[in-house]
Length: 304
Image: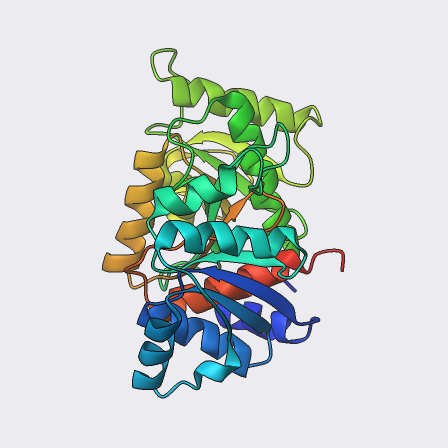
């Protein structure tokens, strides 16, 4: 049976071998709380880079014993990010996590050609899992944070990463909705044309392990009533597992609207690197960071 709640994802991870996380600049309260929760619940072991005195001070203020972390003292956020990546490359961590460090600094450390985590010719993409109270199962969205205007090849990669995560959530044949403003192909709307191409690629076996349909307007992707009213014959419509957004603006707006207006719970990672990389906003809640740790641990444990 597929996982339909993020709490069930956590339960699954607890039943797997413990993973190790390297945290870049682990100095903020939400990161410390989330990582400590993962350690105390037996999911992970953690190494924190950053100002050691700040990490210990914040941990103590939140009644967390800092000795549960391996702390590596670094002078600034750039050095903390580089050191965190170095720990992964040394084989001392199974996944990476962003703490109190800017996204650009974090991503530069990952993308560094000599000392980073990007395999040759790989595409990095962000995948988020949303537990929206009004939807009947988890929604996997891509890309809301990394690829600004993905081309057709990048969208193929995005689908591959999202489907891989869906399979790890025990969704045997995930339904992938390629989102557009309308559900009909319009030559003047590039997103609809590419959606139709992706659909055909799936039908011809070029995109495997899922069923793809698009373009689908947002209402058609998630509403069975909308599908019935509009008379659209689609296996995906009204029951999507994966939403593929046309660009970062569409994806980011949707994800933040769900989080702040619909009280959605979420987990998010960057895929395509040597290891999963947790990329959450510095303003994200402890729960979001904790669920992201669980997702990264699940994907890091794949095949182990």
